[in-house]
Length: 334
Image (cartoon, rainbow, N blue to C red; front, side, top):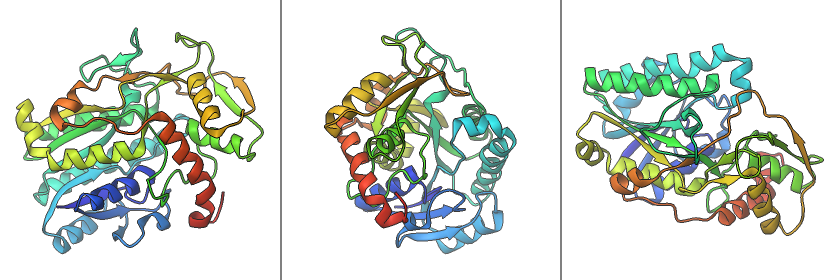
């Protein structure tokens, strides 16, 4: 299959493109390079441009008439930044996605696999959330994801467009061959921050929020190895029509996580175990937009995709540390 991957130069996008290739498929990357680095495109079919550029979308469709599906990953993704710059987030994530979907439908490219987020979920006792649980997105970033889900559901009812929405939990790690990983000079993600502190690139790791209603007061997350997440996309593309037939609906939502909750303190302990040394720690209040967190109920992913995670938390930590040593070679900075 040939698959259009918007945001395919990004962290998850580039690793998903690689997973598609390893499964025998051909990714076609569309990326503005606003944040994703050119180096992550490698030798893949690549179009530099905006997802709302209808003329460019038509050219891609003309040059690749055998496109099977679109994986829509292009987005702004930093929660605190979304609080500071809501206009940019609603414009780029919501308004431009609407243009993308409308043009895809006009071109007859009706299969859309959308990257959503577990940050949509309301805090729930026990913290395990299923796709049918209450939503309470706590930041402009999370609200953009919710809006796009609603847009897709409405378009799927009104047109031939079909949508499978994957709600990501917390991707960590790098690709198996260390060809791509976290690229931000100072990642906002917790594991990226831990790697910087472990390598002495910042004085300490800051635990943000220590009074959440969890077992140890720190936020709880479901940390999934990014390679497992990439494999879930491959499975969803391959089974796209069958998934919607099983649920008898033009759209559906599927959690993608490990099914296990890990607090920040537990993550730090695992990191120090894999790293082999302690990391200096400080504590601070929660960042704007932070929430207590959740972990995935994964029964639907198992039933519809026949997919489960294969890699462990320790595997993900080890690959993140290895990427920390490797990324200067690829990106030109540590």
